[in-house]
Image (cartoon, rainbow, N blue to C red):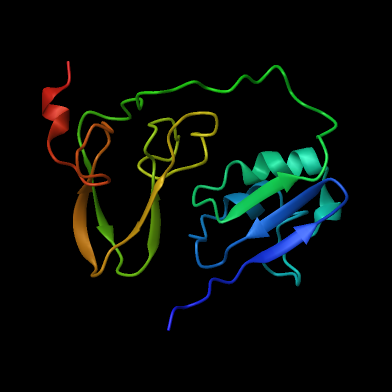
Length: 167
């Protein structure tokens, strides 16, 4: 028997928000960035009257696991033309040596694949507008692992020594 994925929807006249709890890695980026809308202590935890639809979409764009997503029901009122999309095709080198971390079994992690995150090696949503997406993974057992920082590994998110061949 296959397990059915639960999704929650929240909407107003402009936008429809979808939340997939099973995909969420609880990075806290949503509520730390916009507590008036995303408050895990409230029920429902998403209240779309707390900010403009455009501001809500900006916050959702930062979701590293993409557990939160949105679709416009009608075109947004305010588009910020001063913020062009980043057209990154090759990942930025975030570091020339791996980062060694203890990873807890069963806990989801979102590894930054673009190299733009200021929270390396984890995704902070900076990939928006690039062709890169974070790699969400779980370890089967608690263990120490070397995570790639050069973003050139052939076995993401784990270091394979590719940094040794950088110029």
